[in-house]
Length: 63
Image 1 (cartoon, helix red, strand yellow):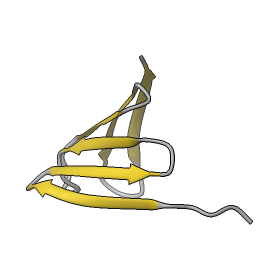
Image 2: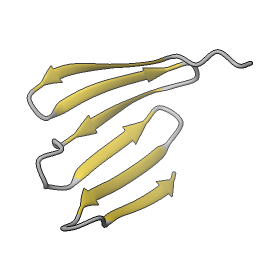
Image 3: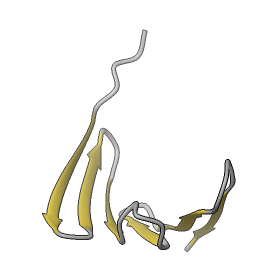
Image 4: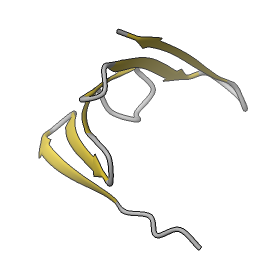
């Protein structure tokens, strides 16, 4: 059984530092309905947004 590690720290309002076993990332934006942008140390960039109802939007780019 694998061991998972994930920790998230709130740096400023709307900015989070996320740490896991292999990388770290910064997330800009909050979960109150607006878009969120995540930049990872592995080069992955994700934009996501919650939409009305049970829908959401996510676009991921690998740099």
